[in-house]
Each structure stands twice: as structure tokens, then as C-alpha cells.
Image (cartoon, rainbow, N blue to C red; front, side):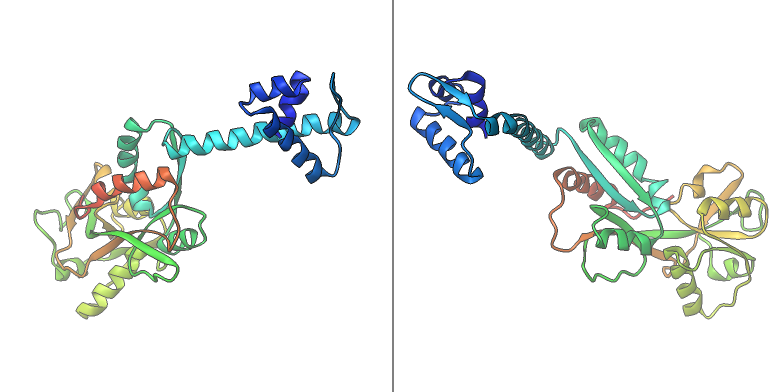
Length: 293
């Protein structure tokens, strides 16, 4: 196609060969191969002149557009490979998306300002499904994990905290015992969340009965209920709500059972895009220690 465009532009096989750095015989072979592939004659030529045939004139804008598009694809691919550009697509637990993740992205973009991020914040089941279907490059999920079609890239832990208003009976220093926690009405996350999975299993293992005052889908809603005095919310230490609301206090729950596993995942057997592979290194540094408020 480049040989065809060069001959069409210069009106000469000799000048076209010079323009695209081919020998004239090699360029002639290229044109012959194109004509054979198309089953069309694209040039009328003799010893003195070269002219486009009618078919050649019709092909000219089409092949010119194709070559430009191919050049653009190659240029964009090379830019991504050199990390000049790229898009990192993530599915992330809401507590991570509103907590530690913005700081990690900001640090990463200081050295890679042209890499964009598409974030989908969702409960663990949705994160897993989006990663499995390759809607995203990386997932940050929580709780127990079915690794069918998925690969765990790194794992850390997130301790649960009790969240309550300032001046509450639980407002003192140190970790909280399960007996202290179970003595108060509780605000729990929705049953489909990884946080609720951890809480239910921990109370069941301890054999403690609890009073559930309310359930919430969003952590901000649970924090607002706690602030209103409706009960004690149980939220992960990574959640922004644990430390962002001035009227609220939090204490870590002492039982090791109140620990949520956080895992970075990808679709098994898939190569990450260059930008996502580099961001994974940033995540490894950020998530190496346990997540705490």
C-alpha cells in the first residue's frame, strides 16, 4: 500500500522507490503483488509515464486512509509500550476506592501523568465478575475468593473497626473485645458484602448473639447511622469513614477473626497492558503492610 501511494504521489517508479527507501525492482514487485491480490490493474505504465487507472483512482483515498489508520495504531501501541500513554482499568472495593486508592494513583501519576484511570467501585462479587470477564485489568477484592479463572497477585489484611459517636460508652482507648461490641445494637453492612461475610463468620464462631439495629449498602450510610446514635457500625480500617467524620470515633476490634483478606486479582493466564503492569508495582508497595486506619 505504501508503494502504491508513493507511485501515485510522484508519478514515477524511480522517485517512489527513493521516497520509501526501496530499490526500483523491489518496488515493482510490491505493485505487482498488490495488483495480483486485488485482481485489478492500478497503474497504466510505459517507458515514459505512469498514470493511475480508474480502479487505482478509486482505491487511492481508501488505501491512504488505511495506511494512516495503521500508522496511528502502531504509534499508539508504541506509546503504550513505552508508558507514554495508556489506560488502567480497575474494579475496586468501595472502602479501597475511597480510602487508600486515590493517594496511590496520585503518587503514580506524578511520574506517569499521561496514564488515565477508569475505576469501577463495587462489592467483592462484582469486582470478581468484572475481572473474570476482563472488563477490567485488575481487581481489588475482599473476603474469601473463588480463584476459578482468576489469579491472586498479592494479598494483605484489613482489620475491622467499631465506629460510634464521640462520648459513646465505647469511647475509650485500646482494642475492643467481642463482649463489649456484642453488648450494643449494631449497624451491619449488606449481606452481599465482604465485610458482612467476615462479621457473620466471626460472631458465629464466637457463639455470640447480637442485636442488629440496621443494615446499609454503603459505608457512608452506615457511618451516618452511627453518628445519629442508631448503633455501632462495623467497618474496615481501610474505609475513609472510619477517620473522615469529625463526630465519630473508632476502635479496632481485638478478635483476629475480624480480619478481612484483601486480594489484587487478574484474569488467569492474561498479560496485563503495560500501564496496568506498572501500576501493579505501585499497588504492591502500597498494600505490603496491613491496611489500618
